Structure formats: structure tokens, C-alpha cells
Length: 396
Image (cartoon, rainbow, N blue to C red; front, side, top):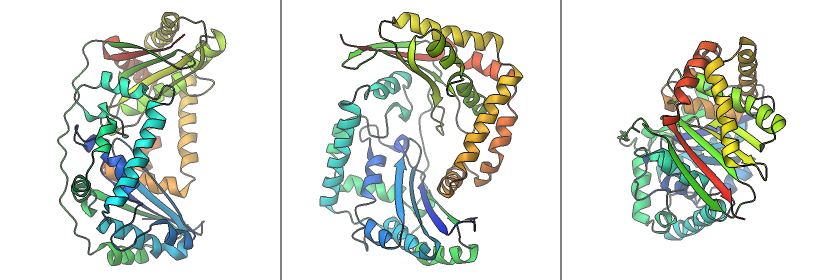
């Protein structure tokens, strides 16, 4: 529950503790397919969107490697409409063969458009397969292969739903111009009779430590050569996560970052360059990605990136620069928290992590990171043996 009476709106957010990491390696893409199926009608409500639009509401959803999230925003006086809609599709989808075929076609077209036919679209297939040997982060949420979606049957879908889409595996957040007593009453009324289901216990194989650098070169019909280098980093609940996050800001946080200033503005080797990570629940990847200026050799560009990483590993960071990236991080978090919908989603995610109140200590955890932490973690992360590099060449 999150009461905010400065707005006339309410948000109902249902986050399911299931993502692509929970899939069978031979039947991938199901978590994302379900995101689409959940809008195809439930057992008592044949069409999801129309009643919500009549109540002045809007909705959306997303799937990640770790969670699947559904959210509604609507005028607070129509809050019960959202409870009615969300509880019915948690109770049971309609499971119509026609709906499954329609959504399979939609997802297959998305797969082709964004990952097969789009320039650089297959980059993350190649990187993940290279970087991960055991962990299911080695495939994207869209799925490992198109055939996994094409061959999905109604029974496969039912099994997935009743395994993961149960109240015991979900977090409900209600936020906005609401009161706790009414929300508890509505929760009991609409969700109380749904069988809670059995808790899903994960048995996900841990990714072994990488002992040697990995490299791959690809030629494709793309406009510019591209450079991607990736290193394994920490899980979301590891205390070192915050130092790793700030390192990405130091190197790639906008136009004043080290990589942009040196390699785009001064040396003019890249047309753009970024450093980021994915914030995954399990140990994930930190990435440096850049498009090369035409005529620049890949070896020269990579050597320049390594030079900047070496500066960080040898000299660390001055307090002034650390304060700057902390301030930038605080501003980003504060700006995101201005949105009621973002606050509801964050509360759900932190509760999935184990404790919704973690949301209140995030800024403090960033403030506790020292220059010594940045130096130490940069030396650990940017070990060449910990890296996977992709050179993506434009065909002449």
C-alpha cells in the first residue's frame, strides 16, 4: 500500500515472480508470450481493454529476465474496476486456441522485426550465448529460437500459467488516492477466493566464474562497425552492486562521462559510446557499447577503450567526480519516483527481492560507496579474463 492524496489517480500493479530465467531451455519465450496472452481475455471477461477504457484507465505490461509486471492507472473512484480485471485474469485465462494462435503470430512477428531483420538485432543473442554457459540469462526474453514460440501448444501454456501465475507467486501494489481499509476490503473481495497455488522453488544453475577471455567477430549488413565488451558483475542484492552501478555512470553516464569525453569528443573514434548494466536479480553483465566512426580500425577503438579502463583501474576516481556521479544517480532516482506508476512498480520489485522497504534505503547505499570501493571493484570487474568481446563489422 502506498497512499498519495496529491493525485486523483490510483495505480494497481501486479508483479509476478517469473521471467525468462524460469523457462525450460527447450521452450523459451513463454514468459514474454504470456505478457501478450494476458490481454486476450480471461475466464469471465472476454475483452480486457474495453471495460478499463470506459473507466478512464490505461494499462501496460513488461517482461524481463526476472519478473513479469502488469499495471493499471485509472481515476481512484473507479479503483474496483482494476481489481475486477486483474483478479479475473489471475483466476484463469480463457485459454482459447484462437487467442493463442493470434498472440503467437504477434510474438513471432516481433521476433523477426526486432531481432532478425533489424540492424544489430541479433547482437544480444550472440553476446549472451558467449558470456553465459550455464545460467538462463543466456537467452533473451523474446526466446532463444523462433520455433519455441511457433510450436507452443495450449497445454504448454496452461501448465506455465498454473505454475507461475498464482497469488503465492505475485505481489499486489495499490498506490495513489486510496485508503488502506478500502484496499484491504477490495483485495479480500476480489482475490480472496483464488487458490493460492504452490510456491515455485527455483533451481537455477549458477554461472561459473569466467577463467579466460571470450571473443567473437561477426560481419553483417549494418551501417557502421560496432564494438561490444562485457564483464560479469554482481547480483542485485550484493552490496557491491552499487559500486558497479556508479562505475557505469563514471564511464558512460551522458556527455560528461569519461568514455564520451575522450573517445567521442576528443579522439573522435566513436560516433557514440555507452556503458551500462541490466540490474538483473542474479549476477549480470556490465557492457561498453559503441559505434565506430567510418574509417576507424576496430583494434584502435578497442585499445582506446582499454586505455580509459586502465586509467580507472590505476588512478581511481577523485572525490569531486564521485560526488558528481552520486548526485546524478540521486537525481535520476528522485525524478523516477515522481511518477506514481514508477513508485508502485518499484515497491513491487523490491518486495520480489525480499523487502519493499529496501526502496527507502537505496539512496543511502549509493552514498556509502567510497572512492576506494570504485578503485577496488574496477580492478575486479575489468579483468580481461572476465570479459566477452564482440566485434560487429559492417559488410562492405
